[in-house]
Image 1 (tube, helix red, strand yellow):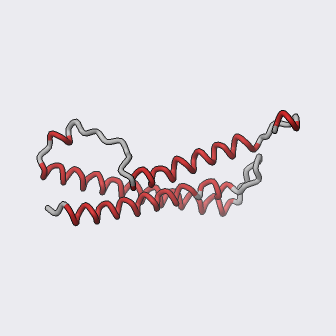
Image 2 (cartoon, helix red, strand yellow):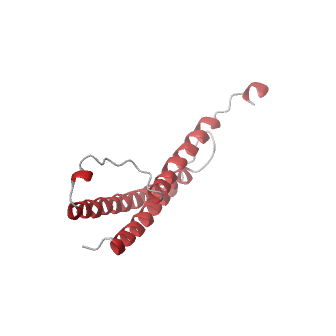
Image 3 (cartoon, one colour):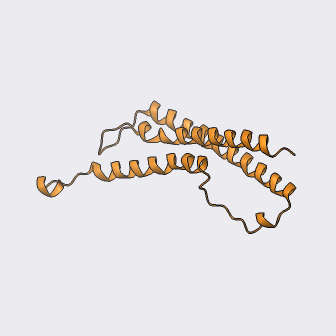
Amino acid sequence: MRYFLKNPSSWATEVYSLLILVSIFIGLGVALRNNEHIAIDLVYDRMNNRWKKISDYFSLIIGVIFSVFFLVTGSQLLFESFKQGIVSISTGLPIWVTYLVIPISGLLLLIHYVVKIISYYKVNKF
């Protein structure tokens, strides 16, 4: 299209970057839901069952803390950019729309971690 009109699209790079960010941030929650995150089993496989349970709970709690941090700081960034009213030069899109994906992905992660904790607790009580 840009060769046809002999006018490069300045907005295309920003739109592509935004779409990549959205797919990464939303993909975090989807990967967690489907148990597709990277895991290192070298030490974990050598633990006894009690230490495996402790390790699993610890990693789930760290995940919840990270998700809450992501949700809170992402919301602060979103509200601050909304108050400032900054608009992208190339697309004319408000910047807060770009930042909206951060608290949404934090919320998705938090939901998935809480579901995992509940389901893990039902199966693996101490």
